[in-house]
Length: 170
Image (cartoon, rainbow, N blue to C red; front, side, top):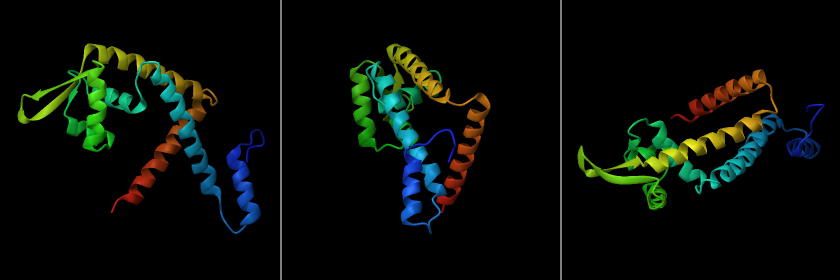
């Protein structure tokens, strides 16, 4: 435990140490904080995107189209795969975003059975503003660390994520 800061995870770990001293709770110290940080940042991001009239899920759709580059077009299937959503979940998001004028669906000129989803100019402006607002929230949260610490944390989390993904592969 840091001599400078104590947090709710420390209290949980101390309770386990008292009740089950045989357990190694070092993983709980890491993942308990990751889960709490994820929840806290998720709430902050939701508030940041709400100023633009969109949810985090809707942000994800618009951001995926924006990152695709010009002409900011993908198939609903590609969007679903990228965002790990069911087609039903994707349809609901697309319906709402289309009604808001932020994207449009049109027939795929290369596949008579397919559709393509494209950002509208209004959607492009909105996502560019929203991504800036989201990054400002993330940057503010990272201001608790110096640049070297933030880089080390990013590197460590990359390694942890890669190691976790390797262990999930069949």
